[in-house]
Amino acid sequence: MEKNRLEAFSDGVLAIIITIMVLELKVPHGSDFAALKPLLPVFLSYVLSFIYIGIYWNNHHHLVKAATRVTAAIMWANLHLLFWLSLLPFVTGWMGENHFTPLPSAIYGAVLLMAAVAYSILQNLIVTEAGADSRLARSIQRDYKGKLSQVLYTAGAAISFFRPWLAGCIYVAVALMWLIPDRRIERVVDEMESAAP
Image (cartoon, rainbow, N blue to C red; front, side, top):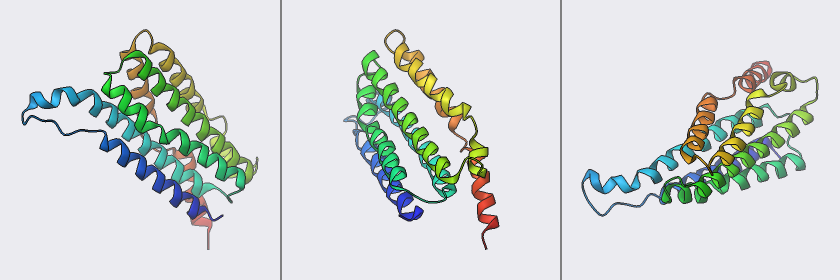
């Protein structure tokens, strides 16, 4: 399979996920600011999830561009990632509608954790295909940020049962940590494109 087909398919799925999430934002019946107040938790959860989808879209783009080729294992790992991301509209709406209560906040964190694990699997397969001595493998190396994200998602999901607001802060902190696309992979892509004839 061509890399651009994998990327185009993933882009389409991510666009659908965003569309489904925005459909959860219901139009208020009133025409003043008081009518918007009950929608604030839903809107805040939507904004956070929209940012997460944007982060995955950015980093996925650079990761696929850095791939040497797409194998069947990479295709399945990509579908695994998209599966977990496709659950974001559900957990986003559930968490927002229930005003960040413990169980919805914990499940939201669990879905973020599983998406991060799925992304790591995809990344490892692409690195393995490129080779242990490749520029891509050297650029990623130990992937501290990816591992820290998984630890923080786990902590956030557990803390949700005691302090849901603190779990929300953890989820926001991880998003802020990833707002800038992964520069390591971006440099590899730039080098590959400049070396191409």
